[in-house]
Image (cartoon, rainbow, N blue to C red; front, top):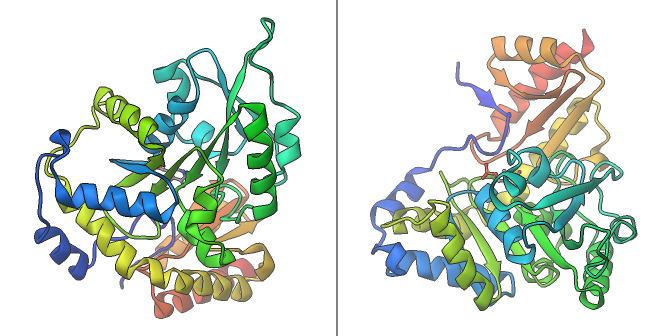
Length: 335
Ligand SMILES: *Cc1c(COP(=O)(O)O)cnc(C)c1O
C-alpha cells in the first residue's frame, strides 16, 4: 500500500523531469558568482517580483533571516503576527544570530490587519523605546491554514510604511499559492515589500532552495550575510535548475492542489470557504488518535496541536490519493 502523505508540501520528491533538468544543468562556482544557472534564476525571480536583484539561499529560514537583517539593526525590533513562521519555527534566529528583537501581535487567525500592526510600531527617535525597524508579513499564512493576505491590507501597510520609515519584509514561502488563489500578480505582492523570501521546496516541489529578492544594494549586502552564515555554495546550478524547472512545470499546476484541498474540505465537513489554498485544518478533533489510526491505513497527517490536524495537498498526491485520504479520514471522524 502506497502512503498518502499529507503532512506537508515539503515531502515531495523531485520528478524524473526535474532530475533530468538537474543532471543537465550548466554550472560554475557560485561563490565566485560564476554559476550561470543560479544567476539566471536569481534574475528571473527578481523580475517576477518586481525587484532589482535576487539571491539564491538554501532555505526559507535563511532567506527570511537575512531579509530581516537587511532592514533591521541589532537592538531594533521586527514586528510580526504571533503565529508567524519567522518567530515560531526559525529557532529564535533573529535574536540568536543577529541581536534582533521581535515583538508580536495576536491577529485573527493570522489574517493581516494593517492598522493593528501600525498601532504597535515604536518610533526610532525615542531613547526610552525599542525602535521598530520592520514589519514581517507572511503570505500565505502557514499556521493560519494557508490563508491569503488581503491585498488591501498589504497595500495599506505598505503605503503607511513609506512615510513612517518602517520596512516591510515578506515571508513568501507560499506566495505562489497566494497568487494562484487570488489572481494577484507575483509582482504586485513583491512591490509591497522591501525584502521578500520565496521558497521552491514547498508546493513547487524542489529538494531545496529559496530566493531572497530586494534592491541591488541590499542583495549585495545579503551576499555577505549568506557567506557569513555558511550559506555560500559552489556548483549549485544543479539546484537552481530544479527551481527553474519548477517555475516552468509546477507553478502552472498549483491550482490542482487547491482543488484537491477543496475536495478534502467538502468530504470532511470543513467549511470550504475556510480553505483558501492547499491546506485543510481539522479543528476540535482528537489529533493523536486520528493521526495514529490514519497512519495505520497509510494516510499521514500532521498534528498541529492536540486538537488540530493539518492536511497539505501537493504534487505527489494525485486525485486517487486525495479520494483515499478522504475515505479514511471521513470514516475516522465519524466514529
Ligand atoms: C517552510 C516555511 C519557511 C521556510 O522554511 P525552511 O524549512 O527554512 O525552508 C518560511 N516561512 C513559511 C511560512 C514556511 O512555511
